Length: 111
Image (cartoon, rainbow, N blue to C red; front, side):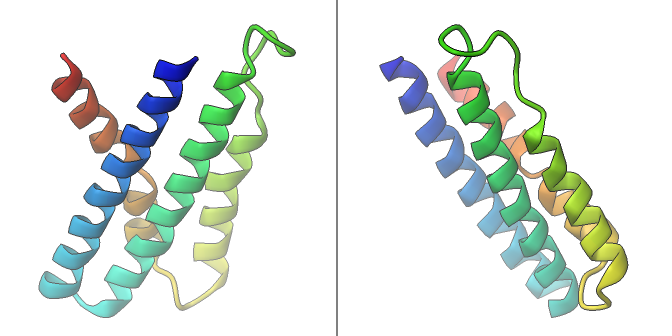
């Protein structure tokens, strides 16, 4: 369990680093509207990753399956981006998916 906790911390840190780089890139090469939407999506992705990790940590002890509560996060992000004119849907969704390159990066570094 201790190695899983260390993996969680490394994955969250890698996600934060990838997100910061992506938001800075978007703010320089696009406008602040896109960067803000990307940032909101990245924060939602971090929250999703945290909920997923907590759900996986419960496996074997009190739970036999991964919870589904974390699926609410991308749904809320898409509804928020569609409802609020301050957010753009595509950059927000790309920001949400930034945990995936961080996951690949972490896998490559561990291998």
